[in-house]
Image 1 (cartoon, rainbow, N blue to C red):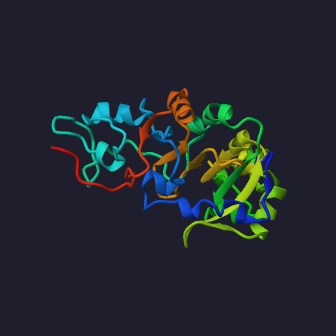
Image 2 (cartoon, rainbow, N blue to C red):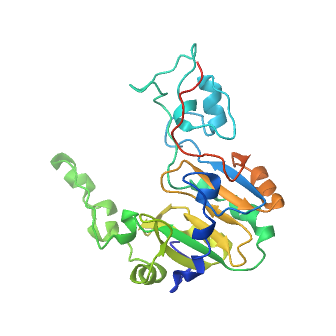
Length: 278
């Protein structure tokens, strides 16, 4: 399930329309093109690997005593308010929570194609992936697990000890073709591999680390052939932006399991801001 349903786009000129419409910095209209009727900010969830029953920024705010809002910053809402007794880092932030940066976790990405589908129909979509991900350029590396001498006899038949079982599967053809072709360049440090395929193929982008394990990565840009909407995830941001019609943004805001807020195209979504109110 790696790049299933996608094919490499040989000419990145199909994405040339984006750059002239990008606004400043990390504004909503700087992540996806300006000019759409409405925009939604989709917050990346709290890292599920942590042993806490906290998945949303609103739940973090409830614990830290902060007030959730459309333009809240992770660096602010994780600072406990006076009276909130939580373990903190040296920087004063709650040390038991983190969020995903640069990619939208599969738990939140999964419902989005269904929300976008009514505005997309059966047309193909363009899926752009930042080419700086190390796993994209991996080779035939082998990971070999070792055991203590005392356990060697017991583990002799463990398939995890077999290098053949640990070898990374070969890169799919679509990825190999994209890597060999030109890039879609949005900024000097934002070169993207470009693919074309169905909307729901966005869920197949990722690293097939073993034949049985798939680690998904969300596309950094996603738009339909008619350009009626665009989804963007900057590699340095902890939220994803969707621009489109008012109806499409309403569907994103209502998608199950998605924590999202309406924003304006000039709203600043940068990770850094003033300190939280005392």
